[in-house]
Length: 366
Image 1 (cartoon, rainbow, N blue to C red):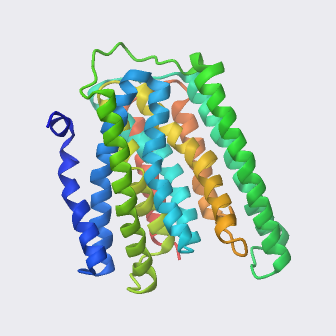
Image 2 (cartoon, rainbow, N blue to C red):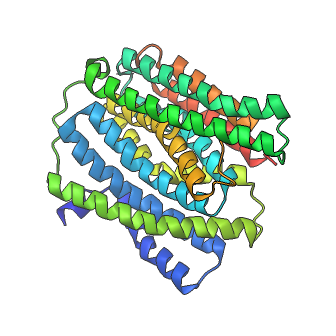
């Protein structure tokens, strides 16, 4: 009961989890209804994941805490992407990767700055750590450009030629492996050799954990299992919406906005709540760690898994031109916003506005 009372109000959305499973396995509703109920259920579940990881983060510090929040928050994203990958929805998966990075850099970071800035005039975080994170993200996005450039420059983006397809597939696999290596090096840099670079600049906080460490771990693992089940319902309903119900929403918008927001809701809630408590360093670490994980770990893992389960038609890293524009815009805008190591509500509001502008464009994307 103590754990239940300590959870934020969205905990009541948990009642949608059994409803989603019953609808799916009992075939009691159409794909649109199942999609909405499963999405709401996942939002409730990720709130629990966020609360449990925050309890763990209080014991391990901001850098490790940010990494743990991002990791368990991205579990939902990874599960949804793997299930969509299995169904061959490569366009939705690539779009969700774009949306996750954009969402973390513009929406999540912007909401955190805004929510924290409303209550605290100016908030600070490690300027050096921010510069290192943005530089890392810029380098990995440059790597992601390589398969797309090869696709557009060598063959004009026209698919069907065996030589063309194999080139893009091999380049994507090579880049995926290199990104995983870069992610490993990033962990060594941020958690061990240069952990002092990311040391918190927040004022001392007296907040104490409300759960036991064992309870937090048990709740975390148990919730992840339920998230996996609800994600299966979510992806199946999404697939039926596109292929059977013919819902007039582009796959690009579903992936970039809807799937990405649902998949990243866990770390989003943690970052915003942390910012309102004047723990901007933790909020920043959650947003940047999540963006880096999507680019450096989740994307490569999906490419490698795709090559294993579907060697004749694997997923590639050939993004559309507008997706790449969005990614680079996200990196540049966040770099400018984080440059001075300070944040306020106005900067946050502007970042959210830019994200909404991109969401509108993706809504009209053919």
